[in-house]
Amino acid sequence: MVDIASNLERLSGEIESISLGCGRDPAGIRLLAVSKTFSADCVQQAHRWGQTLFGENRIQEAEGKIPSVDLSGLEWHLIGPLQSNKVRRAAQLFDVIQTLDRPKIVRRLNACAEEMGKIVRVFVEVKFGEEPQKHGLLPQDIPSMVEQVDSMPGLQLQGLMAIPPYQEEAEASRPYFRQMADLLTEINGSRQQPLKELSMGMSHDYRIAIEEGATLLRIGTSIFGLRSALAVNGV
View 1 (cartoon, rainbow, N blue to C red):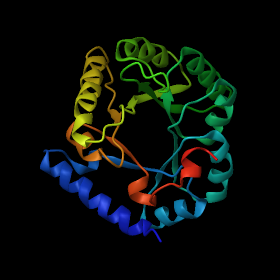
View 2 (tube, rainbow, N blue to C red; view 1 turned 180 degrees about the vertical axis):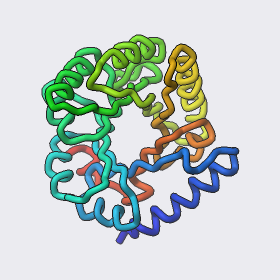
View 3 (cartoon, rainbow, N blue to C red; view 1 turned 180 degrees about the horizontal axis):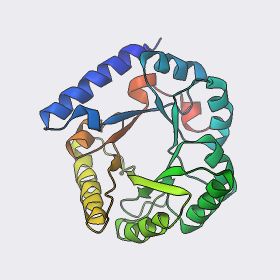
View 4 (cartoon, helix red, strand yellow; view 1 turned 90 degrees about the vertical axis):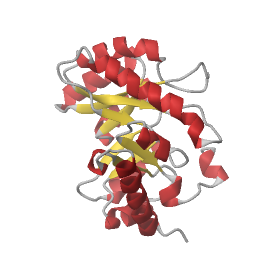
């Protein structure tokens, strides 16, 4: 039986320790609990500890889970790819969408947000390398996407998000995280209002991500335990 509260307590302590160890204020780093494939009851257990940020990958799963949790004060993030035919539902369900990577999706999401009379907070997703299965934009294409998002009245850009290529050794992720921080600095060089958020780092490499400037950690396994093979494969 996974003790979600104990896992969150341990993570909180580790995040604080790592942050102070590299000269950062722990208050500037938030924990997003990745609840994909886990039940509404797991979300409720985490909330009882005090966790308020949760991430989901699939619209279909979120449609059943988010309404059933029925707790005030939660903030839901979409951290999986967004298909054009699900943009409207995503705008209704989620407070934050972290995976913008196509002009078509940006335009459609903005139109839905304006129709609903709301502002949707968003991240632009960065892709490192040419992995065909990965979503996101290559670093050189990020500035033009940022400019497009900035022009949309229904969207409020928060920062950048990335899922680097998986590395067995967490230290091997450091160059990607450093590149993310450099990219954000470059973008902010021409902005009146700097972007502040870097969504990067997961259960196996969040320590390195903190050292390289992450402000939002997406952690699932270290909170909720291992996912079943069926769940991971979407069955």
